[in-house]
Image 1 (cartoon, rainbow, N blue to C red):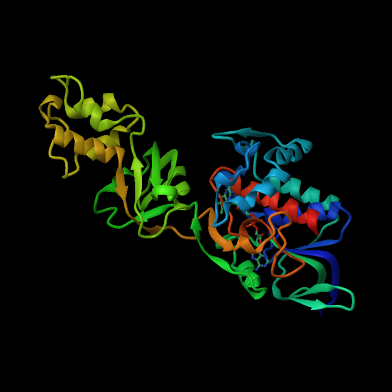
Image 2: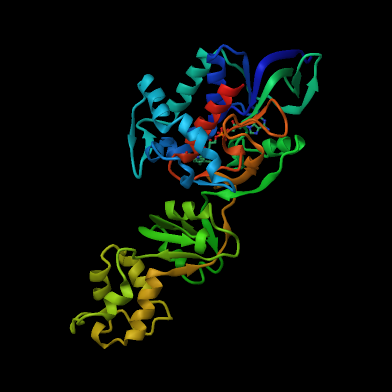
Length: 413
Ligand code: FDA
């Protein structure tokens, strides 16, 4: 039998943003309920960062931060990130004695387990007297006007909830197996919001005829590359590691570029970013005695041998690996060098939401106040975290967005 529960604020989605927001609202002395359809809360935190949760990035301290986010309005993030910094979140973890370390490019990970972050958020929620409802299926959410104020009423399988403020923190579409749904987009549309078409981001890419080209035999090779896509003002590039897989490419380089990649567009991979291979192969005096493969190994010591052997065996190179370097025409060497410095590939698609770490697109942030996260379409309605058209780079930026946007909304309700 349904009974009505009244709260100052109801938050839908007990993930990173939802828990942070609920804790802050509760600690400010307001009543708050956190509803989630899953039995377990914070599942994306648990599986993040290989189980160690890359919970923020130090590079955000002292920056406006917008360069680390993909959105139709990247500058939207500036206020929230300046209000609640990466250092604020580390101070929160320090207060609970959670040990962490910096791994790479400012990325901070738990020393032990992502569960440490979930525990901190749960303890923060407990301090604020947050009321939890898990396995709570939301059947409808609608505004209604009382004599004195506007309220929201939510019908669920557990109870009817009434509140002054409704916060949507249902995240993106990545990994439906841990509870991701398009619910937030549907609710936003119901309240008159537009949705920037969601697509998998931070996701491995696939290529047609991968095995026919023999690239599947390179599976397991990991190497530093420079990856780029787009042109002119849209051009982006990352210096990161690339991972060859049986079905295509992955690794941080691919995950980063996938957030920018548009279907039908090529990506360019510089397999030897430290060298201009064509110039090095053609220029200067060539050692008369050494073979092409030995020359390449000397010029590009960072290229894995397995990749190099494969590269030289490709039919388009008329020179063989064992031919004397000095005997090979410049045009052939230039072609080879160029192929290593600018390997151009046309992705056929991605592994999709199942394997993605984030979603590009979401609720159009033009219709949200960047200081309060309140909807410009519906008073009392707020959006926080990944449900919005804000996607961070790989490296802790998505969690920092969850924390910062949550803190702004909590202060506003
Ligand atoms: P989040 O997804 O955390 O929470 C949404 C909540 O809403 C969930 O609890 C869900 O059950 C609930 N929900 C959904 N639909 C609902 C409905 N219909 N009714 C009720 N509840 C509903 N980021 C980063 O910065 N560093 C990292 O290391 C990683 N690593 C990583 C690994 C993997 C495998 C993934 C999939 C993702 C990451 N991320 C990451 C991204 C990061 O997890 C993500 O950006 C944040 O969790 C987003 O926080 P939100 O609170 O917005 O959504």
